[in-house]
Length: 216
Ligand code: BG6
Ligand code: MG
Image 1 (cartoon, protein in one colour):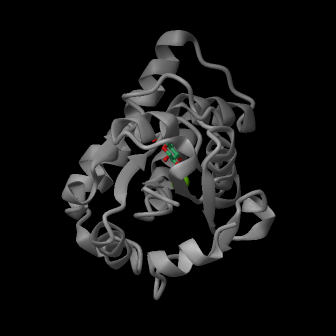
Image 2 (cartoon, rainbow, N blue to C red; image 1 turned 45 degrees about the vertical axis):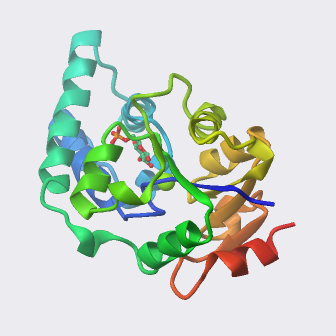
Image 3 (cartoon, rainbow, N blue to C red; image 1 turned 60 degrees about the vertical axis):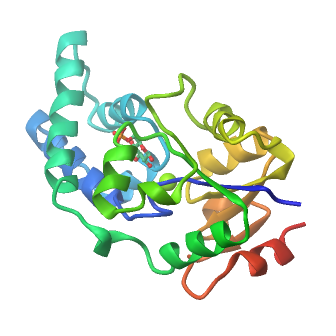
């Protein structure tokens, strides 16, 4: 019995990875090294601070604390330049219909994202009202694969973890869902998300009944 669907944001609701990539690439260029799309895969689901640490290790570069903070600020400012221009056209295929179907069945919907920009993004794409609770990078201290973000999202709507299913596109997020003792649907391929209970490429043409029937 599932009473709550918890959605990751980046890569599940909306494809923001390309904007994160452009902003991180600009930062890497400003620091004098290259950052490829292949490297960008390592940042999915990873917090802003951890992402910067990974990027600096790729560029074999170290930053003093003040420069590190400035790099985080610059990257986010550049990222927000893109985000402030997006709208509902950026919602991934089938997501709006899927959310509406979940809610019509009386199942709660919550957001469980590492992003500190999650609420702004939901506002920009017009989906804030489709969530009973929004838990993001501002509300938790421990990043995925720690289960905190998903446990907080479940608690916000008074649903036991065993009655939640998480939709995730990142390996760290799948781990977090399993660590929370929740069901997990991986959005993507088995090479990255093999530990999820079931996999699907996205939400196009999929409804919640189909997902619930497939879950173990
Ligand atoms: C995750 C993204 O959802 O949020 C990561 O997958 C990102 O790539 C992280 O680094 C933090 O996002 P933000 O918006 O707080 O920098
Ligand atoms: Mg994601």
